[in-house]
Image (cartoon, rainbow over all chains, first blue to last red; front, side):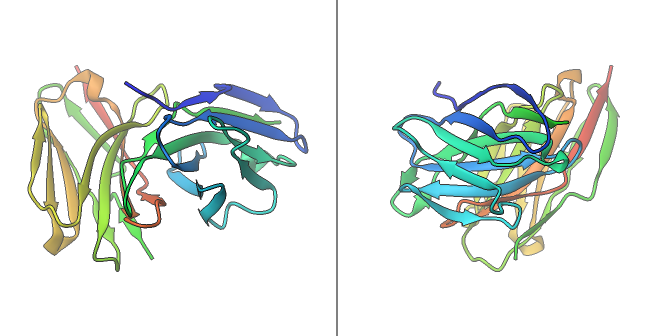
Amino acid sequence: EPEVTQTPSHQVTQMGQEVILHCVPISNHLYFYWYRQILGQKVEFLVSFYNNEISEKSEIFDDQFSVERPDGSNFTLKIRSTKLEDSAMYFCASSATSGRIRETQYFGPGTRLLVL
Amino acid sequence: AQKVTQAQTEISVVEKEDVTLDCVYETRDTTYYLFWYKQPPSGELVFLIRRNSFDEQNEISGRYSWNFQKSTSSFNFTITASQVVDSAVYFCALSRTNAGKSTFGDGTTLTVKP
Protein backbone atom coordinates (compact mmCIF):
# COMPACT_ATOMS: atom_id res chain seq x y z
CA GLU A 1 0.00 0.00 0.00
CA PRO A 2 1.38 3.44 -0.88
CA GLU A 3 2.48 5.51 2.08
CA VAL A 4 3.83 8.90 2.98
CA THR A 5 7.43 8.80 4.14
CA GLN A 6 9.29 11.34 6.23
CA THR A 7 12.97 11.86 6.98
CA PRO A 8 14.65 12.11 9.34
CA SER A 9 12.64 10.32 12.00
CA HIS A 10 14.39 12.37 14.69
CA GLN A 11 16.26 15.66 14.48
CA VAL A 12 18.10 17.48 17.23
CA THR A 13 19.22 21.04 16.59
CA GLN A 14 20.47 24.09 18.41
CA MET A 15 18.25 27.11 18.87
CA GLY A 16 18.68 29.54 16.01
CA GLN A 17 19.69 26.89 13.50
CA GLU A 18 17.80 26.18 10.31
CA VAL A 19 16.17 22.79 9.84
CA ILE A 20 14.58 21.19 6.82
CA LEU A 21 12.13 18.37 7.25
CA HIS A 22 11.59 16.09 4.30
CA CYS A 23 8.48 14.33 3.10
CA VAL A 24 7.72 12.14 0.14
CA PRO A 25 3.95 12.16 -0.42
CA ILE A 26 2.04 9.40 -2.14
CA SER A 27 2.93 9.62 -5.80
CA ASN A 28 -0.43 10.50 -7.38
CA HIS A 29 -1.44 12.93 -4.65
CA LEU A 30 -1.69 16.62 -5.37
CA TYR A 31 -2.42 18.21 -2.00
CA PHE A 32 0.22 18.33 0.70
CA TYR A 33 0.07 19.34 4.32
CA TRP A 34 2.19 19.89 7.37
CA TYR A 35 0.90 19.48 10.90
CA ARG A 36 2.70 19.60 14.19
CA GLN A 37 2.05 18.07 17.58
CA ILE A 38 3.76 19.44 20.64
CA LEU A 39 4.41 16.64 23.11
CA GLY A 40 1.21 15.65 24.88
CA GLN A 41 -0.94 18.09 22.96
CA LYS A 42 -3.26 17.89 19.99
CA VAL A 43 -2.33 17.90 16.34
CA GLU A 44 -2.28 21.40 14.83
CA PHE A 45 -2.54 22.36 11.19
CA LEU A 46 0.35 24.39 9.81
CA VAL A 47 -0.05 24.68 6.06
CA SER A 48 -1.58 23.16 2.94
CA PHE A 49 0.03 23.28 -0.49
CA TYR A 50 -1.38 22.75 -3.95
CA ASN A 51 -0.20 23.54 -7.44
CA ASN A 52 3.11 24.86 -6.15
CA GLU A 53 1.63 27.39 -3.82
CA ILE A 54 0.27 27.64 -0.30
CA SER A 55 -3.50 27.07 -0.19
CA GLU A 56 -4.02 27.83 3.46
CA LYS A 57 -1.87 28.44 6.49
CA SER A 58 -2.48 28.79 10.20
CA GLU A 59 -1.34 31.55 12.52
CA ILE A 60 1.46 29.24 13.64
CA PHE A 61 2.97 29.31 10.16
CA ASP A 62 4.79 32.63 10.41
CA ASP A 63 7.74 34.02 8.44
CA GLN A 64 10.10 31.54 10.07
CA PHE A 65 8.39 28.72 8.20
CA SER A 66 8.41 27.93 4.51
CA VAL A 67 7.43 25.01 2.34
CA GLU A 68 8.73 23.88 -0.98
CA ARG A 69 8.27 21.17 -3.53
CA PRO A 70 11.77 21.16 -5.00
CA ASP A 71 11.15 18.30 -7.40
CA GLY A 72 8.34 15.98 -8.41
CA SER A 73 8.45 13.86 -5.32
CA ASN A 74 9.66 15.78 -2.27
CA PHE A 75 7.80 18.25 -0.07
CA THR A 76 9.85 20.10 2.51
CA LEU A 77 9.21 22.22 5.57
CA LYS A 78 11.94 24.68 6.49
CA ILE A 79 12.23 26.44 9.81
CA ARG A 80 14.71 29.27 9.37
CA SER A 81 15.74 30.02 12.93
CA THR A 82 14.47 27.41 15.33
CA LYS A 83 13.11 28.29 18.74
CA LEU A 84 12.72 26.08 21.78
CA GLU A 85 8.96 26.07 21.27
CA ASP A 86 9.39 24.56 17.81
CA SER A 87 10.17 21.26 19.49
CA ALA A 88 7.38 18.95 18.36
CA MET A 89 6.46 16.06 16.15
CA TYR A 90 5.92 17.26 12.60
CA PHE A 91 3.58 15.27 10.41
CA CYS A 92 3.41 15.48 6.65
CA ALA A 93 0.19 14.43 4.92
CA SER A 94 -1.04 14.17 1.37
CA SER A 95 -4.33 13.67 -0.37
CA ALA A 96 -5.54 13.01 -3.88
CA THR A 97 -8.18 15.06 -5.51
CA SER A 98 -11.32 14.12 -7.34
CA GLY A 99 -12.78 17.20 -8.92
CA ARG A 100 -13.30 19.60 -6.04
CA ILE A 101 -13.55 16.85 -3.48
CA ARG A 102 -10.40 16.08 -1.55
CA GLU A 103 -9.83 12.52 -0.55
CA THR A 104 -8.65 11.35 2.82
CA GLN A 105 -5.38 12.73 4.06
CA TYR A 106 -2.74 10.12 4.60
CA PHE A 107 -0.18 10.93 7.27
CA GLY A 108 3.49 10.13 7.38
CA PRO A 109 5.15 8.65 10.48
CA GLY A 110 6.37 12.05 11.64
CA THR A 111 9.69 13.72 12.38
CA ARG A 112 10.40 14.42 16.01
CA LEU A 113 12.24 17.74 16.26
CA LEU A 114 14.04 18.70 19.43
CA VAL A 115 15.45 22.21 19.73
CA LEU A 116 18.05 22.68 22.45
CA ALA B 1 -14.76 28.69 12.83
CA GLN B 2 -14.49 24.97 13.30
CA LYS B 3 -14.11 23.26 16.62
CA VAL B 4 -13.84 19.67 17.79
CA THR B 5 -14.45 18.73 21.40
CA GLN B 6 -13.41 15.44 22.91
CA ALA B 7 -14.63 15.82 26.44
CA GLN B 8 -13.05 12.63 27.72
CA THR B 9 -9.38 13.27 28.40
CA GLU B 10 -8.62 9.77 29.64
CA ILE B 11 -10.55 6.53 29.75
CA SER B 12 -9.44 3.34 31.39
CA VAL B 13 -11.20 0.02 30.84
CA VAL B 14 -10.50 -3.62 31.42
CA GLU B 15 -9.94 -5.87 28.46
CA LYS B 16 -13.13 -7.13 26.77
CA GLU B 17 -15.15 -4.17 27.94
CA ASP B 18 -16.89 -1.99 25.37
CA VAL B 19 -15.87 1.66 25.32
CA THR B 20 -17.27 4.72 23.57
CA LEU B 21 -15.20 7.77 22.75
CA ASP B 22 -17.20 10.95 22.33
CA CYS B 23 -16.69 13.63 19.71
CA VAL B 24 -18.74 16.79 19.31
CA TYR B 25 -18.02 19.24 16.53
CA GLU B 26 -18.97 22.76 15.52
CA THR B 27 -18.98 24.07 11.98
CA ARG B 28 -20.97 26.47 9.84
CA ASP B 29 -20.24 24.50 6.70
CA THR B 30 -22.99 22.38 5.19
CA THR B 31 -20.42 20.06 3.68
CA TYR B 32 -17.67 18.70 5.83
CA TYR B 33 -15.73 15.56 6.69
CA LEU B 34 -15.19 13.89 10.02
CA PHE B 35 -12.30 11.60 10.88
CA TRP B 36 -11.02 9.40 13.62
CA TYR B 37 -7.30 8.71 14.02
CA LYS B 38 -5.44 6.44 16.38
CA GLN B 39 -2.06 7.44 17.76
CA PRO B 40 -0.34 4.51 19.46
CA PRO B 41 2.60 5.02 21.83
CA SER B 42 4.96 4.83 18.85
CA GLY B 43 3.60 8.22 17.75
CA GLU B 44 2.34 7.75 14.21
CA LEU B 45 -1.16 8.75 13.18
CA VAL B 46 -3.28 5.90 11.91
CA PHE B 47 -6.36 6.75 9.88
CA LEU B 48 -9.45 4.86 11.07
CA ILE B 49 -12.44 6.36 9.30
CA ARG B 50 -13.72 9.26 7.24
CA ARG B 51 -17.37 10.27 7.15
CA ASN B 52 -18.89 13.05 5.06
CA SER B 53 -21.73 15.22 6.26
CA PHE B 54 -24.23 13.77 3.80
CA ASP B 55 -23.80 10.22 4.94
CA GLU B 56 -25.31 9.59 8.34
CA GLN B 57 -25.28 5.86 8.00
CA ASN B 58 -23.46 4.29 10.90
CA GLU B 59 -20.47 2.16 10.10
CA ILE B 60 -19.05 -0.98 11.58
CA SER B 61 -15.60 -2.33 10.90
CA GLY B 62 -14.77 -5.37 12.96
CA ARG B 63 -14.73 -4.31 16.61
CA TYR B 64 -14.99 -0.64 15.66
CA SER B 65 -18.23 1.22 15.05
CA TRP B 66 -19.07 4.85 14.53
CA ASN B 67 -22.29 6.70 15.30
CA PHE B 68 -22.75 9.93 13.34
CA GLN B 69 -25.62 12.09 14.61
CA LYS B 70 -25.92 15.30 12.65
CA SER B 71 -28.76 16.52 14.87
CA THR B 72 -26.44 16.58 17.88
CA SER B 73 -23.22 17.29 15.93
CA SER B 74 -21.64 14.17 17.29
CA PHE B 75 -19.47 11.47 15.80
CA ASN B 76 -18.85 8.89 18.51
CA PHE B 77 -16.55 5.91 18.25
CA THR B 78 -17.18 2.60 19.97
CA ILE B 79 -14.71 -0.21 20.45
CA THR B 80 -16.36 -3.51 21.26
CA ALA B 81 -14.54 -6.12 23.33
CA SER B 82 -11.52 -3.88 23.82
CA GLN B 83 -8.01 -5.29 23.71
CA VAL B 84 -4.74 -4.13 25.22
CA VAL B 85 -3.53 -3.21 21.73
CA ASP B 86 -6.32 -0.65 21.53
CA SER B 87 -4.47 1.45 24.09
CA ALA B 88 -3.65 4.71 22.33
CA VAL B 89 -4.65 8.33 21.98
CA TYR B 90 -7.64 8.71 19.70
CA PHE B 91 -8.25 11.94 17.83
CA CYS B 92 -11.43 13.13 16.20
CA ALA B 93 -10.95 15.66 13.39
CA LEU B 94 -13.05 17.86 11.13
CA SER B 95 -12.24 19.30 7.73
CA ARG B 96 -13.93 21.43 5.14
CA THR B 97 -14.36 19.91 1.70
CA ASN B 98 -12.56 22.61 -0.20
CA ALA B 99 -9.87 23.71 2.24
CA GLY B 100 -8.05 20.61 3.35
CA LYS B 101 -7.20 21.90 6.80
CA SER B 102 -8.16 19.42 9.51
CA THR B 103 -9.09 20.67 12.94
CA PHE B 104 -8.30 18.12 15.61
CA GLY B 105 -9.80 17.56 19.01
CA ASP B 106 -7.57 17.35 22.06
CA GLY B 107 -7.62 13.57 21.93
CA THR B 108 -8.78 10.87 24.32
CA THR B 109 -6.20 8.61 25.91
CA LEU B 110 -7.58 5.11 26.12
CA THR B 111 -5.91 2.60 28.39
CA VAL B 112 -7.03 -1.00 28.17
CA LYS B 113 -5.83 -3.08 31.08
CA PRO B 114 -5.42 -6.85 30.87
